[in-house]
Image (cartoon, rainbow, N blue to C red; front, side, top):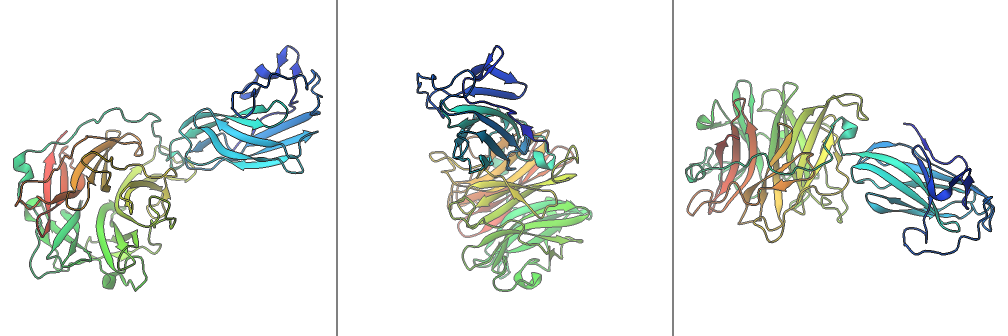
Length: 481
């Protein structure tokens, strides 16, 4: 990428170039100026007599160059640069960097014995064109101006995302009491592997039939099963359930998914069924997200490089100790000339151990890069979701991301609705769209994990889990924008 060269010969005094003085010199993208009082504190010094018009004042002649290693970048790509000074006073010269969009960036240091300083800007800068002031601590503190165009996260993968956030939701699904109180379409069966709960449905059309994947349990630890049929009214559980267990995958103690498999996310990729799911590596905790594939929709093999997303391991991160509830979209990109050399991208939203929602992108669906500025969605205390969110399920339609999510917490989960134009900044409907129903309904205790399936006829199907006093089962709601 091109280097942005700043100053061929800058004298940090009262520079005179014909009629131009240091305070008002502009050379294309290059701007030189004087920060009165130094480093943005706004306190005037009231005295610039130390510097003569020849630039040889008490600080002596000083020339400075600076460069960035990129002028156009993705939000989550790190950009670094150098400052080089020659002349009297160059050794030990201090510097700081300030953005007109994000303020001081926490980048500061001193030039070494050779008058050279290297720096790296933080990732996660606001999208937009930044004018970066490189403040130099010399006499009246001087500054150089750099320009850096920061594109929204995903640009490096070929995604062209808007810089402005969504202003209003394009639509909000609505269901009648009759729909909400309809019987479930998949129910528990006594004395089976899933006799206590069915949760986290995910539906696809594959091989001429509908396949609905789900997590099931007869006690505490979940495993994955599937039901098939031509429509929601004739779904039949596969006789070989559960389809993903430690025994089925060959997992051994210590593996990322040895103790449990849950929250499936099914999609058809290159003629195969890809099944993302979370596994548990410990008796309690240790949640990771992995991937298994199948050529028939019933028999799965884990991909070699699992898990595809793991906790960061830093307990101060929102996703430092657990990741789960994957929601994945595959999208073609508009151009292949990008850093990732991608012709398509996989976008992943996931829940964290702190019950917030994160975001990551991959060019192959197996190696994901996290959004570098933390969680992209979380609940709000004092609202219906009580600051607790999980189980994102995202659809892409007509240039918008639309998401169901589970909010509130154990004993009060309900399904909410949110929208975004970039997958990062979200606005919500303000109330649950799939609320719990009066007892003793099968979904009176909680509603959650509403998978979105958009039909060719424009019908939106919401496959969701409901819980009553002692069971979890799966229902279906439909609406059209």
